Amino acid sequence: MKDKVRNIGPKSAAWLRQVGIHSLAQLTEMGAVAAFIAIKRAGFRPSLNLLYALEGALLDCHWQEIPGDRRSELILAADAASALLPPARGKQVHNAPVSTTYPDAEDGDAGPIPFDPE
Figure 1 (cartoon, rainbow, N blue to C red):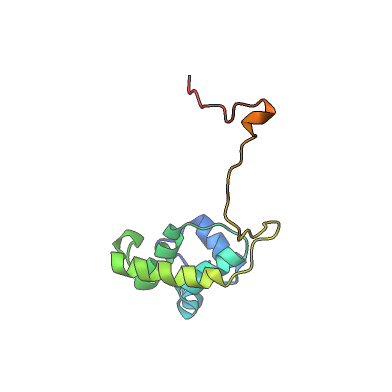
Figure 2: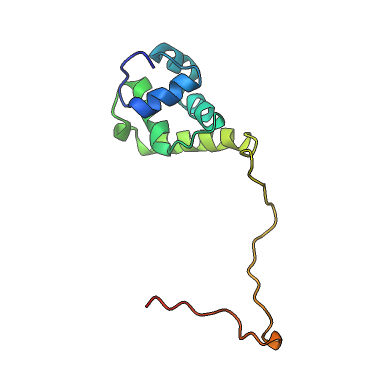
């Protein structure tokens, strides 16, 4: 990002540039959620703090001043948009429940080994 924008540090600015956002005007046009999703789609792993920082940049306030109800709205919108993203390359999507199996005691194994922290 060429402009010095509130809440946007060097790493966030680099991510924004990577997805084609080079100014506050472009960020304003795109919106916080869409910019956040574009960064995720590009393969970066931003935290929700970036989402709040982007919203704060648009509102010209510190990201921690974003009210809780607005944060909830942002999270819901980001989650809905993220659900539409394809899975990351190299990652398999598992829809089956995960279960743990142990060898049968009849095979000579007494089962799981208890954890001993010492």
